[in-house]
Image 1 (cartoon, rainbow, N blue to C red):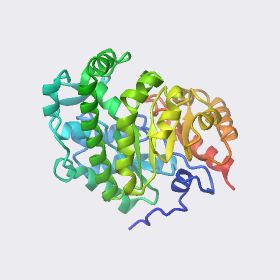
Image 2: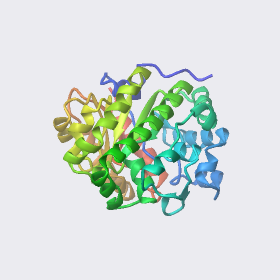
Image 3: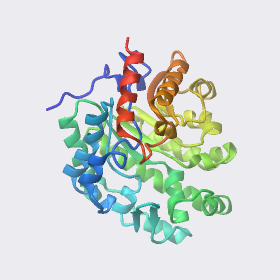
Length: 346
């Protein structure tokens, strides 16, 4: 049995703003499409269906830990999995993303969003994490979808750049909007509680598309729900990471919601993020994923810049500013992990 991570683990220590022997590294979407071993193992079947096979999901989760030497394993799953498991008709369509069979339109649709009973609806999720904690020496990160992002997929019916239907419903029917977000927060809380009970040592909320909102709209329409999520999961006692893309104008509000770690995308330098969100005890980020497609000297230069800019007195977890792009050379990520470890060792 692998030893459980302790508070001296680099990833957990950084999340707590404590001294570390080196800056920890992990990558969003590190398990998956950039790895040839992933493509060979999973084949062409449904991603959501593959999650119901714990041995398969655990092996996919461990592949990047072996290949890259990262300091944490993020469980192979999908933010839409709890909705799918509770009977919402959704599929992950290759080249498109989540597609909802019957998009959310009215009060009647709330009845389709029943509470998640994780042990019954998703027993495979806890089994996967339990397997991982038995076999890995690094912490396992669980995750759930943030309320705005899940609501957007439900309302738009598929990925959207403008989120126009989502914003229209949000402004036109605020009571319905808040009811929807409360259901989605309940879903996220149940998901996270199950993951931590199974052994996840940290969790991340992916509210990936919330950066499409203005600061005023975020504070009015999303912050109350997100704050309740963090209030309701504080008792779990694990680091919680709050992440979104394009959230430079929202960082102060996001930090006030209560997470221990604030994820920062590549648009905002870490010193600026620390200034905008002084409540954040630790920051995560924030190399542009596209930089990893450039020649190695460019990748190394940009990684060293981020390392040199880290604000004093704030924990730092090195990550990309969003997920690994499918075209990324796995060897580049392995070299990146080595570089960050070597340059920050002490």
